[in-house]
Image (cartoon, rainbow, N blue to C red; front, side, top):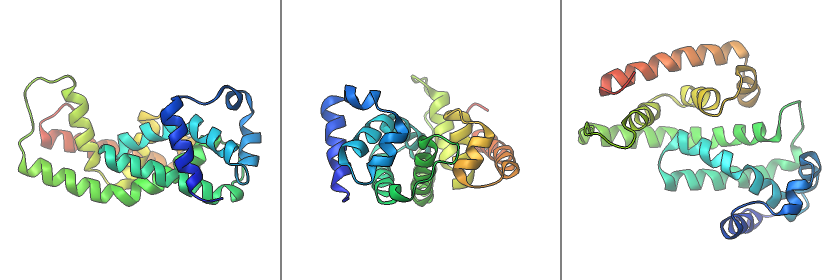
Length: 198
């Protein structure tokens, strides 16, 4: 199946805004089994999981254009690899998070460099805004390593358990706990350096 299926699914999501009624009723394991040979099944999966993957990548990457590229690349990668997908007790979305994490990691260094350059050349806006805390946290998160961004975003922002994050990122639970502790420390330090909330 070729990546134009993803473009078709994107178009359907944009025009309809939500999955078709029939696709909502079909069990996800059945859709996954059919998706590698059936564009309609893959489009249904795309429509079901696009909002969560887009939200996760938005939190990881920030820039809307970079986010949309990463979302598209995630689903193209899913389409290319779905024939090899194996259910291992985790939801299909966890597999998509793993693919999205790979896309985010490839772009995180570039996004962090751009954010650093912008923060170093422009003063931080200290005027009241709609959500200054969120803006400071997002800027600080972009300064962290890709590994720390991933565990913090999946655990704290997406609400995944430590065990689910470990499965998603294919690492040990102890590694996730360690990265979370170090990531929180690094985030706190970044926020203090930026003068934002800690």
